[in-house]
Structures are given as C-alpha cells and as structure tokens.
Image (spheres, rainbow, N blue to C red):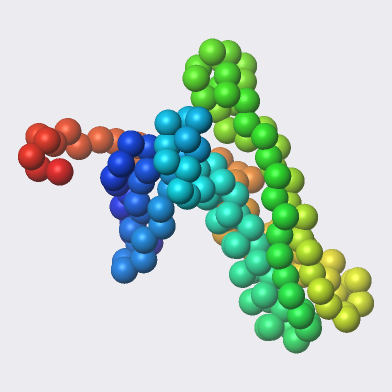
Length: 146
C-alpha cells in the first residue's frame, strides 16, 4: 500500500492512494475550513469501516446472514497532550469505544462469532490495539520543488 498526503490550503490536506483522493481538514475554530473530517475522525472512520469490512467478509464466507451493518465510534482527546502541555497526557485517544450495530435474523452466537473474528482479524483494529513501528523521516526540498 502506498499513499501520499499533501497540505493544500491551511490545515486542509488531500491524501491520495492510487486514483482515489481523501480530503482531511480541521474545524474552523482550529484554523481549518471545516469542509472534511479531521485526522482523528478519519482514523476513527477507517477503524469503523475496517471492522465492517472484516465482519462482512467473514459473514459471507461463513454463510452468516447480515442485512445491515454499522459501527458507532466515540473517543475523546485531551488537547494538553497535543499541545505538549502535560507529558503524562497522551496526544491521542486514551480509549476508543466501538459499538457494532448488526441487523440479522441469525442467532446471537453466530453474531458473537463474527465479533470475535473481527477482534482477531481486523487489520486497522490490530494497528490501533498494538504498537506499530512508524519510521518517520523527512526530505527537505526547496520551495520551487514541491
């Protein structure tokens, strides 16, 4: 998987993966234009969508009927961590709550099995739950080269 993100206007960025573009922004009160989800919201959206995809794929594979599927997500961030005001406060979410909403006529045991599989096999959930090494580096370019 290969992608690129580029700030295009203030705090608004465009992320490109192949021919697809995802816009990320900040709310107006944070200096953005308020036209798209912020990075933390996009991360939560990716988590929810990945849980949905994992459950849907395994439901289809196992023959478990699912009429509709969604994930409600909530998390709170403490800005003291983001601004570096308190070293004991994480910059990210200390807790994320994800509630899977499934419409199905299947027995609860079958749905519980899907949730257990998602807990083990969902790639974005795995990245959120376990430390993932991120190799952060930079390329300094002259302004005319970007």
